Length: 287
Image 1 (cartoon, helix red, strand yellow):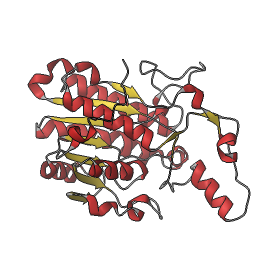
Image 2 (cartoon, helix red, strand yellow; image 1 turned 60 degrees about the vertical axis):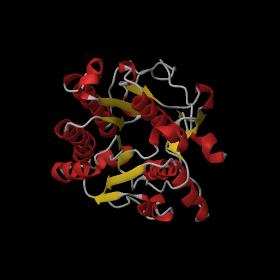
Image 3 (tube, rainbow, N blue to C red; image 1 turned 120 degrees about the vertical axis):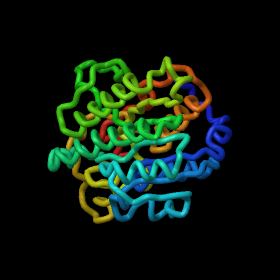
């Protein structure tokens, strides 16, 4: 089953809705906040301070958009539960995470704590408040086992991950599935009203991304300093996508979940470009 990216009903879907974004100070989270505010949602945020300087959160004055904003760690269950209780969200987009592969080698424990227990805290909070809502847990296309097949991954492919970051995202998928099946079974939606899906995307580029070890920021910095761009894996193919493309997918998914009790939507979803749109790291930097 696929999702058609029909934007015509987005305003109707989110107008006046209470939406909580975890990780709203980050790259994708800040863009999602802008988009939801434009659609007329009452947006609340829960996150640490911006992870980079500069940041899209500061540049675009994201903090001015929120009905309520909590500066706190996703690992703090008590603060998260208090924030969710105040927000009373119709929709939760969970994006708070440690997002960098190389950092996961330097601090594997924190990566697992933030990514895995952060997701547990969000889902446990939803279980405790007993309020019908839509939850979109954002993971990564790196949640899959590194198979040798050249085809794009399907949602039913085995989960895995050789590095701590990828393994943590695979674990988040398992956590999400466990909560969905144990506490919020999709076939029993009329009873509990909690709809949970996960969204898998990666290789996201665009304005406002200033994270370390990211190809576009690294290239921009090198060029601004008149030095060569260092490429770690120049011939690797990646399914690059602009930041607004996966966000389009997240909004479409949440909108469909709001509008329907179709249990098939409460599942895992891949969001990526057409396979013909892949390019090597070298091609991207040269472009």
